Length: 323
Image (cartoon, rainbow, N blue to C red; front, side, top):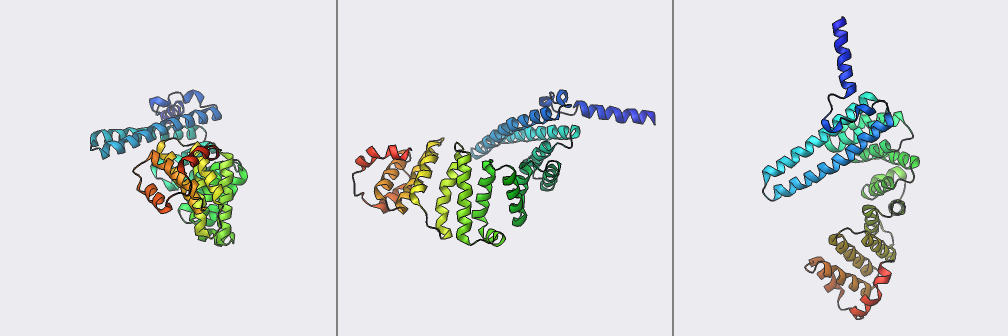
């Protein structure tokens, strides 16, 4: 009996000291008695290594497309090893602090997004929510999962809960706006709204998300894109507001490609607003960035000759477009 007990204690010590951890995480055991510090350190490692793994996966795709399958596979395997190390780290953290709501939530995200282990992820999120009912993140994650699997009523409940717990989190409103626009028939039934109201509520969410995260390109662009959806919901759109949304998007553009699409889509808003001079000016700017764009050329041809001189419009419009 005694030798067996000694063996069990030795194994327990090995796990506590992190002998099973990859070398990159050898700093974790020193933090094991401080839950907040341990979870924070692990989360930082997760964010850093996930970004590196994503970069490797992108490079692997590029190498594979170029025919360099050997390098592509090496990059892919390196990314996989990074995700495995992150998993080992979270499992170590949870052995030390199984009641950590944040660690359970992050572990669930890893299982869901990187390993495709849906059941395990949902268990982790549900446990996280039960451990800290005021922690909003697991409710958002459960909302996404339930909506992806068609359980829209539960998904809406979880979105509502997440937003009520953290009304200043832009991502939650962004996610719910998308859910409204994509799954509007189910939203109509559950919320008991007509189709135009679904759109109006989605735009309220999208606008508020933009206000909460004015420097987030994806959220700002999403608000601009959502104006176009109004036509499918039977709602009259203020196309001047839509144009301004695309101007705001362009101010955050990170590449010429993003700037091109902001000019192109702003042109579309002015076309719908029946403002040909502004539409023509936007199309000219789009074609400066991508002279071979068939879409921009077609819109320009459909627009016909501008009633005013393009040079005059370009001289006075930039100040308005960059407000």
